[in-house]
Image (cartoon, rainbow, N blue to C red; front, side, top):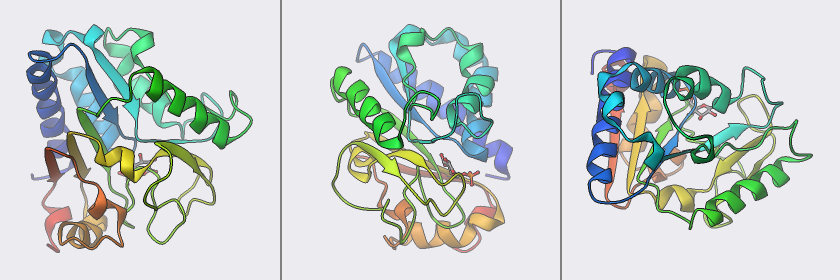
Length: 231
Ligand SMILES: O=C1O[C@H](COP(=O)(O)O)[C@@H](O)[C@H](O)[C@H]1O
């Protein structure tokens, strides 16, 4: 892929086709979106794509892999960025949008994580049909950071993260186990600053959370040329 825009365009087209394919065989599709530069760029490309007009969005549910525990409306919120980039442009029913709670809605990140777990349970604990993940230069995915207590096996489907090495320090994340329940995991990354962690992850070094993020049916790395230079 030549550059970041191409990664976003390609991921968006793949997502829209995958949703259509899945809806031919099942009633509901559960998509987990990601924040980050390429993640939000991908959502903007979804909204701009002519293919988006062919999707029955009432059958699509949107979830998040992680969220920053800051007040609603804070520009750091992944869900706010997704709202501007994609959600505002699509006819998705509000009840299909499963946001992780903000610090203006919950006293603690633990309470926000608990509410998110309740939403997952209420939805029947679905296997995510597509789960997209950005990759940090440090090899983090969602809010699972290398060498940090956030990156662990087991635990509940979603939990609070404190003292995140990347600001803001308090977050909510899906667990690695929940990520691994996804049918399709797509890691999307662009830029030379990601090259070293991309190489470590695709060579299977599970020191990096990105290496441990795998889907049950498919694990796909959608990356640009600069991010691929160290492989
Ligand atoms: O903090 C986060 O960072 C990652 C990656 O972001 P990027 O800008 O380096 O692509 C993102 O995937 C995650 O959702 C977000 O909370």
